[in-house]
Image (cartoon, rainbow, N blue to C red; front, top):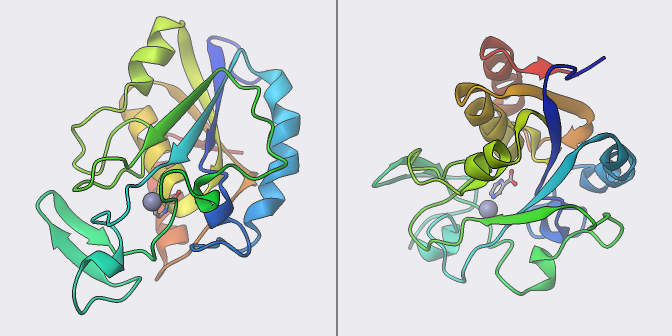
Length: 202
Ligand code: VGL
Ligand code: ZN
């Protein structure tokens, strides 16, 4: 049986309108993950949802940088950053969870709310040092294993999985309940990095 040794949490990454078809940063098939994720929620001791939650004018938005277009790269003080279309702006319908996603989980953790720093991972912002608090929450509840699902496989799901593995959690990514963006090979790279880090791809 999976995760027999540890109490396990399901971490549902960014199943928000802007990452679903019709949204500002739509992931192909993004809404396909909703039904399998809802069904998985029963099987875990804890369910955590993350919510990408940017202020208007966020530094990860191409529109915040003169002459830059979405999907171009930029160097920010903490390192290289992909520039995105404006998405998941706080209190907009794009930032809301998909209407069919079950919201009876235990914790909603918001990320990406600091104007100058993006946050793909549910554990650390993109500067790799600023914690979101999720590690402490999970350890405090005695959780040693996490299963990750949601959007996007090659960004927020992969960064979360790699951080969780580095922090010593037992990590699974359930690919049937994830969808990717796939920018210039990012999906294949993410799958390789996760495997190399000891993440179990289910
Ligand atoms: C995400 C790009 C920008 C994600 C969030 O949820 O994977 N990707 N913000
Ligand atoms: Zn974002």
